[in-house]
Image 1 (cartoon, rainbow, N blue to C red):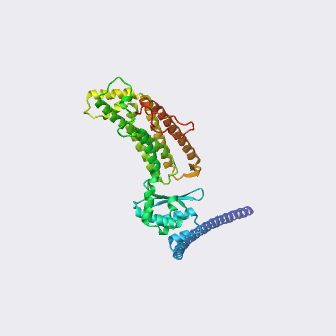
Image 2: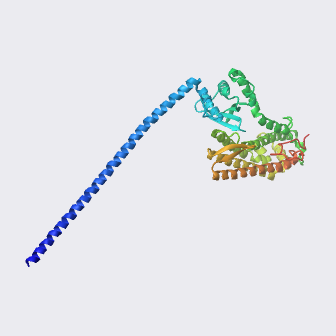
Length: 437
């Protein structure tokens, strides 16, 4: 019995010892984990503090580097003779970059300077001015730019809000051997000679006007050349002559608008976003003008009746309206021509609006002809689709004009026989035709 009690107490003591050892071990493990977590926290704090210290040190060092570079640039400009001279001697700049930097230094703040190169050696500099400028100011800027850049530039142009203020081409630039000695008046005289910038427009307008009427008092459309049963009095014939002159004047405006649609497709002068926006607004205005001239093609008699003076007698009104209705005979073709022109203008507006929305994703390249190169494939595909649609509408407008002009007024505005060699673009507007007395 005593032996059994002894063994029982021994077992209890052993259990107590085991429990105490296990509890101490767990406490030590928890303490060890606590110390590890504290060490990790201290290490993280030390690392964050070190990074912040490095950032503060780096910021201080960057400020010192920027200040050193600024002092170096100022010293370089002082030693080389000024800002422009330092740009000319900067080995890191290309010729294109040098011309752009010179223009930026010379021109007023806020001016957008665009420099491009064609055929590797033909440089052009376009300055989109943000403020108005006088001819004297532009002449001074031209001199400062061309003193170092005359050997490279083939075109120097000043533009504001899409309008060309002044321009010097290669012929003007080569007219003076030393631009540092060129007087302001001589440069302005070259600006004045820039009437040739509008030579093509004037030539087209003169061609249309000459073919339309040689004498303002003698329109091509005569009451006596039209077939009809109604006899016209002298007063009615005079009223019809006034209608003919106004009809031909409006027709010239429509043909000039069609020519402008063709020119607005050209991308070689889309150097700034402002010029693109101005061109888009011009198309919008042309669309409004076409809407006002719809009756000119669909029902010229009604168009005249709406515009006539209230003092015209009823007999004269009926005689003129009847003569117009009898002689016109191209209402269907006129409606088709007007609709084709409007579709062409709408296609052009969509094309220019897309170029405006995707500004910065495309550039104008030249490989024989000017074309638009997109850096984004999807946008390039959409541009190609819009351009093809515009081409189709332009051709449709040319064909509609040809059908209308051959039939309107019995062929008074018909085209002369053309040579067998193919010609490009719209048929010649309003050539001398039959019915001319």
